[in-house]
Image (cartoon, helix red, strand yellow):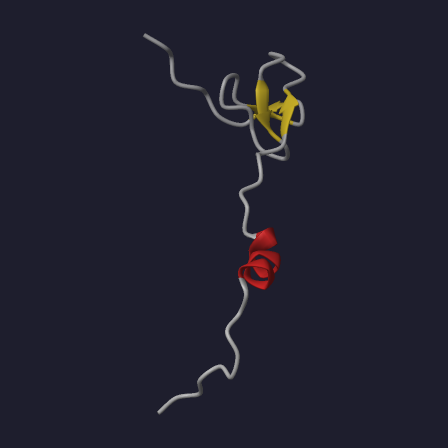
Length: 62
């Protein structure tokens, strides 16, 4: 047999433990080239630039 808890964990204590399990919203910043929102420290998916350089060519929209 494995170890079993001696007391039941109350809902309040269980909620205190799970308080950090929430989802965080992604941190968006404006792209300096196209002014569209992008993830911080990531290349812009709209124009394909990162830190003033062209890193990839974005797909053309239909």
